[in-house]
Amino acid sequence: MANNWWEIQVLCDPALEDLVFLRVETFGCRGTASEMKGHSCLISAYLPQEQAHLLDLAALSLLFRQDALCVNLPIPAVQWNLIEEEDWSSSWKQHWHPEEIGDRFVVNPAWLPIPETDRLVLQLDPGVAFGTGAHPTTQLCLEALEMRLGYEETHATIADIGCGSGILSIGAILLGAKQVYAVDIDPLAVKSTRRNRELNQIDESLLQAQLGSIEMIKQLSPEPVDGIVCNILAEVIIDLIPQMDAISKPSTWGIISGVLLDQAKPVADTLEQYGWVVATLWRRKDWCCFTIRRN
Ligand SMILES: C[S@@+](CC[C@H](N)C(=O)[O-])C[C@H]1O[C@@H](n2cnc3c(N)ncnc32)[C@H](O)[C@@H]1O
Image (cartoon, rainbow, N blue to C red):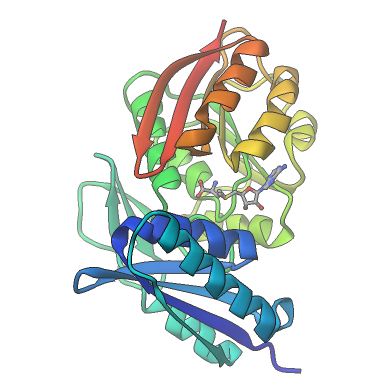
């Protein structure tokens, strides 16, 4: 049977973009992209057909409407189409362009020529996994890695928990990390990380990607790691913090994102409760990123 996909398109005020992203991700969409259309933002999101009925899509549209009304913005225009597998990959790809992130990176879609640049080129085919470089939390994490590894520390061993496309793991290796252990509970993310590792010609021994979560890092890494990067949602992070001790040493640092601003306090409280100090808190749009170290 052909695998068809729903293409959900939301044309909204740019101020609503983050909320729409959050809604489509929570809904289970696997590929998302956004672009400006005049003064509006067009968000396209993709979901396997069998994962949603028409009624679910109608309910999702109502949520967009509700969100807009709550913050006093125009109601977004929503449409959905059923598209075939081949059309999905090509229609999704056309949304992606090379994107400069921080001072050091350019994220280049793997199907485009490699750009001439002094920056580190992060070749990426995100497939259906999260992590294209377009999301503020991914950008904040890459920028924090750049500050940590680019100027202060190389040869670090790093755990990437919730690796998605592998973008942060690959970024860390390009910046000189010695060894990265990448884990994700989604088998498609692990597959995507391995594919992107190959695209960036990184040896498997430098970047190991496995299905699982923090407990898998313990199995992969013979020693506690130097750094932890973790870009997942706040409630998952709060559950993971107590387990971070098992892979850390006194000098271990962390880069934690995926946290909406209004969820920053419970995350910070939990970090402090488990012996971590919040060194900085970076913000982009409605999201934030913590850099942390041991107490
Ligand atoms: C927001 S994406 C981040 C992807 C990528 N690291 C980035 O920064 O763009 C979060 C990823 O975490 C994974 N995830 C969710 N809960 C998890 C858990 N408890 N342990 C490990 N991975 C998890 C999801 O499958 C998803 O791929």
